[in-house]
Image (cartoon, rainbow, N blue to C red; front, side, top):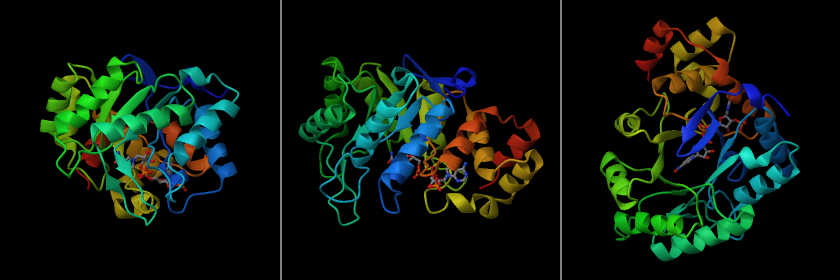
Amino acid sequence: MGTAMSMKTRTIGNRTVSAIGLGGMPMSIEGRPDRDRSLATIHASLDAGVTLIDTADAYHLHADEVGHNESLIAEALQSWGGDASQVLVATKGGHLRPGDGSWTIDSSPKHLREACEASLKRLGVDAIGLYQLHRPDVSGVPYEESVGAIGQLLDEGKIQMAGISNANPEQIRLAQKVLGGRLVSVQNQYSPSYRSSEPELRLCDEMGIAFLPWSPLGGISKAGELGSTFAPFQEVADAHGVSPQQVTLAWMLATSPVVIPIPGSSRPETARDSAAAVELELTADELQRLSTTG
Ligand SMILES: NC(=O)c1ccc[n+]([C@@H]2O[C@H](COP(=O)([O-])OP(=O)(O)OC[C@H]3O[C@@H](n4cnc5c(N)ncnc54)[C@H](OP(=O)(O)O)[C@@H]3O)[C@@H](O)[C@H]2O)c1
């Protein structure tokens, strides 16, 4: 199926994955498409050679549909004609959506354990490929306790690899210590409009840990305006005859070999366009120009 053989790859822990992943969030929260379009989007991405899909139990809209996005991904993988065993599904625990549009946090060990058990069932696997602590707790649960709970899930074989999200450099170092060197990924916000995660990106590069930029195109509502907001990205895109979104992803890949962007999609067209960014080679001059834009 597709062009999986030619897809450029990167590494998360001991797994080889496509250099660009698929973010599942737009298919399950406000503004989401219907189920058929979501399944077509995931299949388009897989057909293009994508072998990393990012999700979370909290990617849902109504209170009674926790894990909406995980269930969609499980269904899409089951109905896909290719080899789904090569696909790494990265999910997260620690966020909740009570159904009023808000996002709340519970990163207590008790909640993380329950959340992981529920994600295992929805994904229909014996062990989750990559489980990420979605966000540090704000209600007094020490960070080392949240990360410690993830470490226990690793020890028990309920998850194969452990990652963290929305972490600062101090938390990255702490998580690596608590996990005894088994931290494989950090997922932070990073895009032309949001550069403040550069210290975390550099630290991951030094530590040899995968860095997964979230909202790499500026987020669901802003992604379409990327070219008009950041003229150099549009100009480089015009020079190559591609989209400014593709240029953004190619530029990001060039910043470090540990970077694996996870652009979200709710349409097959955008999923294919983003996956094709692995083939786009930018010149040193172009990269320099883009690095100073934003
Ligand atoms: N860890 C966290 O706290 C956290 C927070 C936010 C997001 N995330 C993860 O990061 C992923 C990505 O972030 P995001 O979805 O918020 O924002 P994003 O990737 O910056 O933008 C997503 C939007 O970009 C559009 N798009 C994608 N590729 C495109 C292309 N090649 N050309 C034109 N438009 C394109 C899509 O449009 P269409 O809808 O039209 O396809 C989609 O709605 C999420 O899906 C989620 O998995 C994690």
